[in-house]
Length: 369
Image (cartoon, rainbow, N blue to C red; front, side):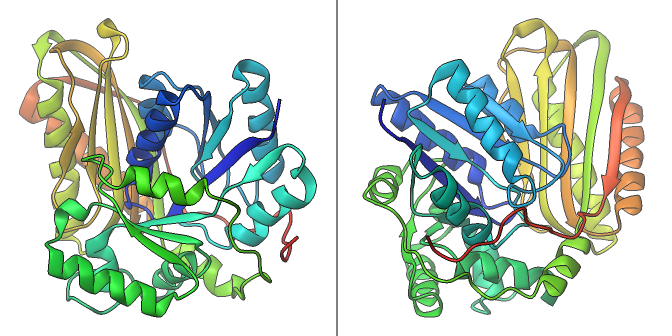
């Protein structure tokens, strides 16, 4: 057996990484390649893992920190997938608030495991509306300067910058963003895709399978500023059992829940990085609904719809926002209470945690091989 390909797809929270990874996995699977997926979160209970697993792909989830701080767990996850399914291609999605991944993941993998893995160019996805605002090309709500520092560092280290969600922009806005990104980050190749529509995936795949990415010295990162930026983001994960004595519309519940949370965040002036919710029906196997909101003024969208009404299921909530975690906890509990009153459903919280990410402490940090 030859080397397995290792593809890492980064990008800030809300860039659409999971949908893009699913498109890559589907296309590669169609070429008779075995795929293994690795997801990542600061804690457990990850919507991405549920969604990717529902499509039939083997998934390992790394929790408790980013790949850079859980490097050994990343290697172990790859080894477990190898033992179970022997993937030809690994696709890994790091935490959306992490950067410096070339020096702390890419280069160490090349140095220590280069005989086992062919490391693909590092892709960083961007939500186009968020990028237009952060680059100063358009007005609108965004993040504070310390969070923006992380966002810009992600782009600086990219081999390939992938503008996702091109269906949101007309040709002129897309051309302006593409030109600005190429001028600001000249070492990266800039591509444009719509993961939702499946457009541009073949071109992106051609680029990341054409050879290794560039190797250079580790980029300069102010870890104090990086840690401060991450600490401004509140993270909340929750698992809620939903039940009723009669069938209900799970898609309607997902949209109601997301809009209730959005309204409460917007009222208090908290900027959403990403709100993701899934609702899995207990009685219908892999039937799954998924709703996303990626900016405070964007509105929630149902990206995967449940096919049948349900009487019971599990609601998983992942919320990332520039807000105090304790306040996020109160907002979610308040939103659930409002839903109970509006819908008459039974909503029992099984697990809820809200926290700030700890200071990033990479296992390894190397310059190029």
